[in-house]
Image (cartoon, rainbow, N blue to C red):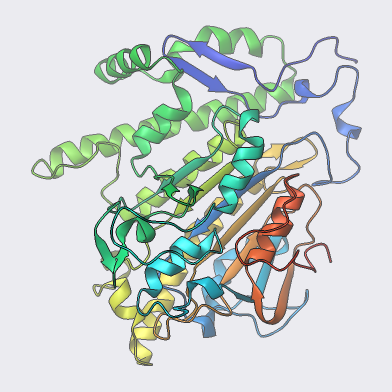
Length: 455
């Protein structure tokens, strides 16, 4: 049966203090077009928007347990990457990529600060711990400046460590270099949000700050959901949707409510267990829970097309966080200076595996969400990596880099690709921007597009 009406992608469920974007629905396809035959294959170019995210982990990796021995499609996932098996065919493992501008190049110590500030910019930061910081525009912000007007938020910057924005954090480098991955201009970092409650409110509150604040307090007082304020809109829309779209809408709104409930639980635990510590209410006590809820918020932001560009820092560069919940009580940075001690290397591999398990969760969540004729993962490019290879050597060549998602059919996944030594990582960014309809001639020290992403 042919539909005679269409839902705009910009439609929101609105209520007092609330604005909830919608996931992709069949009813968003052009009127009179049968959604089941709109695309020939899953993940092929279509009307579905392309998303791009960059997930960062600090202090490098234990590369012996990271890098597959085989190249091409016939590779085995090494121990650190084992949790990616359910999404193996959605991955590109990219070896041999380098960040030359994270090296000293005459500036002495400070590899951690350089590795993060260079990670998405490809530029050498000015060595200073004063106000005259300067590095370059990051790849996410290049895309946001071109396409950010298409969504409610041009980009979303999240993480799990706050970090200072001034002072000396690494051998004469400003703390801003160690805490920020996203740079709007060479001198202006884009601060990340680490409190999931504040991320949630940003995603699902309306633009009227005074009204949003009042409603937020009322919801908290009466334990109400943002959905309670948009219920009328939701019921009205659902009544006009087909069965498949009603299911999609219900799954999405259920996800919104579940995150609210988890945030409320975290706030109750903080109030009871840690009354003496000044801590934002929405941050869970457990690090794993913190990463998980931030991951779910990122998925909701992409699913509702609230933004198409995001960065996610699991921790600041040089982080010395211990991991007692996986029986590692030494600090991460301390262990990364392992001196080839096998016991310390094994612990680094265990931390790497913990991080990778959470990245696998992100990819599986994206893959579980149908969108058009594919999945949310099909319509994404998700980069994961670090600006350091081996933490003990502080080297910036052969970095641990993964690219997940088929990029709307423009990326051939399920492969391990090895590039020649000293191939700039920024060449990958040139290729990602091309697929994001943001062609540029240069990102940092790039020398051209990276070959081999499409087979």
